[in-house]
Length: 248
Image 1: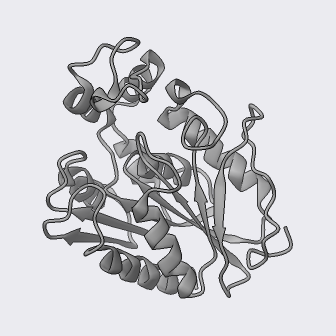
Image 2: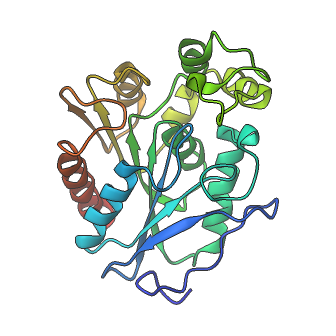
């Protein structure tokens, strides 16, 4: 890869050899790359990620949308997808990039939990953005999937998304990410909708209170978990301003 303005990105694989599906949006800045990743049952083509990548690209930021292994068109098994495994996926992507690149990571929902996990200990992430970010993983598991039996039931009653024992064990073992939140030392922007009924806004509020400076919490009135076309422009604007201040 010569620079992120060119369409010559490598084929990304994780350490298990699973190909990771990505989409690239070119930008004018040659020294930076913004990685965007999804949440539970999501993939790189979720409307929020597409709108955000397109908006940032128009402002000069090269963007890479990523589907974690087992999701979307990436190789792998959905039931193996956990915060721990996806954190390793993200590190493998970072390993494939030139070390001189200034990398920002934007994660939605569980993808934000992945970002916190990696940014807490990996200095290659220079700027962190959490969109409706999950912090209390065990509470999320119980609240959203407490009526489903791991290995038998499904996430939100959708058969294409089985609730695996591995996923349940990982979220339960993590419990919450407040230790990692306290270890994040890079500029961190948190955006959350006040009407989110999937990941409670208290996760972002309490993470913000725990995190070190520089940090910013943006609450978008009446926005749901995945935001919507009416609120995408605000999300794009807030993220672009944060990147310009802390990465540009």
